[in-house]
Image 1 (cartoon, rainbow, N blue to C red):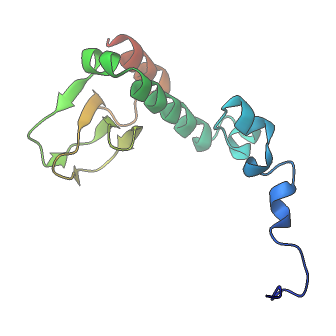
Image 2 (image 1 turned 135 degrees about the vertical axis):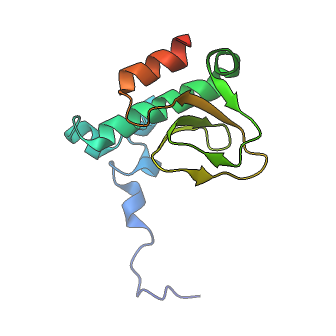
Length: 128
C-alpha cells in the first residue's frame, strides 16, 4: 500500500514538545490547567478551573462529599444554585431551573449560583 499523501510522514504533530501526547511537562505533572487559564487568571476560565479542581477532590474523597454536602433526592428539576454531579465529577453553577436525568446523583453545594469561589471551596472542604 502506498501513502495517499505522497510520502509525507503521518501525524508529525505528535512529536512536537507542546502536544500532550508527546510528553509535555503539563501532562507529566498532572496539571489540567489550560494555556488560557495561565495567561488570564482573572477571567472566567480561572473561575471554572477552581470548580473543576473541587470536583476532582470530591471524586477522590467520597466520604467528605457525603458528610459535607446535602444530596438532592426526589427532584426532577434543579433550582438555581451550585451542585456537584457524581456522574460527571463536576461542580456546576446552574442559573435557571433544569431537568435532571433519573438516577443521577446530585449534591447541593449552595443555593446561590453566583456565590464566590472561596465560599464554595469552604463549603465543599469543611461543610460550613
